Image 1 (cartoon, rainbow, N blue to C red):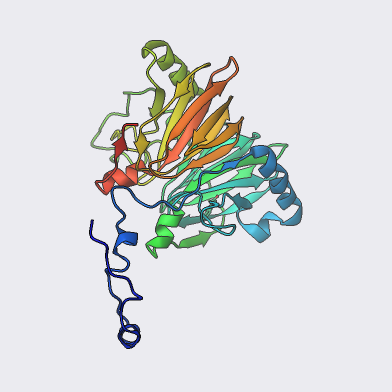
Image 2 (cartoon, protein in one colour; image 1 turned 60 degrees about the horizontal axis):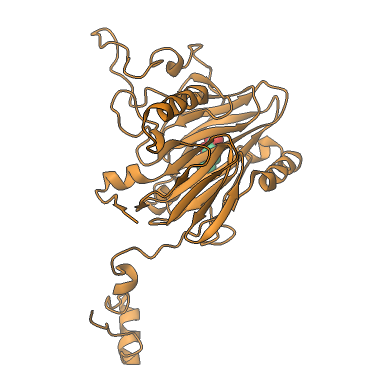
Amino acid sequence: MAQLGTLEELPQDYREAMARAGIGPLWPQMRNALPHNAPATVTRSHLWRFGDVRPLLLRAGELTPVEKAERRVLFLADPGRGAGAMQATSTLYIGLQLLLPGETAPAHKHTPSAARIVVEGEGAYTVVDGEKLPMEEGDLILTPGGCWHDHGHGGKAPVIWLDALDLPLFVYLEGSYAVEAPLQTPRNRPDASQVEYLAAGLAPPRRRDRPAPSAFPMMRFPWARTEAALRRLAEHNGGEPVELDYVNPETGQSCLPTMGFTAMMLRPGEQRRPAQRSSSAVFHVVRGRGATTINGVRHMWGPKDNFSAPPFADIDHAVEGTEPAFLVRIHDAPLQERLGYYEERAR
Ligand code: 1HN
């Protein structure tokens, strides 16, 4: 491969003339923009233990009233990008949000999409475009871009949930903004996932007098059903990896446009060595313990912990103990598939 010329080789007066003209030579930077065979990744794998984050989040509850925060959130900052980085990977923003009993977080809608995974506590709810969605531990709840959402909490103890947004992508696109409003009045209709889409393969019939299905027909994926489906799959899939994608039940596509959510069960004693994927990911542990080595860094994880993986990472999972482990892999494969370049490489 040819060695390309450097900036230093060029005459000083020429470099200054280019800078004055607002232009630059490509060749000294070409290999940075297009490294050979695989991207140069910035993201550094990191483990955020829930035991470390939880006390800081509860302290935020004492220091900052929800009215002063709107969303009382501590975000996971990718160490590859530094302490203030509002991103866990190139495209994924992950935060942990605290709502105390009786508190509400006002309505807004924004261009990025969000999903929540409930981590601790009960009695909270999210209202999405007028639909009041109860929040139970492990549930995945969508707030797609452009949908109004506010939160409330009628329970007795603090509630903590994980927020996943494609915010870094929208910031990069110079397309991130929000519109604000007071709390919504719920329509008083149960959430569709509990009524209209209760079983896989069954959907409300098309009728002339009904509107076409919404772009996001399933807004809540209760954890109890996800875990039951994973356990059932584990009994019948001949030792293959036990994984289920969260999809739109009308189209079979990913449940949000850019972010993917994959529920994983790791059997006791199971070791898993997935292919290198071009997508980046954050793993959220719903239950269980284990160790995952990512690009040579070993993370010992337990319930409610989160850890990240850059694109094309070497990932090795192992479960600890006699119980299965359940994780949700939050990733950007749907975005990459839509851009036509998602890739997996055998190891
Ligand atoms: C947001 O709208 C929420 O609605 C949480 O709960 C975290 C982080 C960045 C931008 C918008 C929420 C957010 C957010």
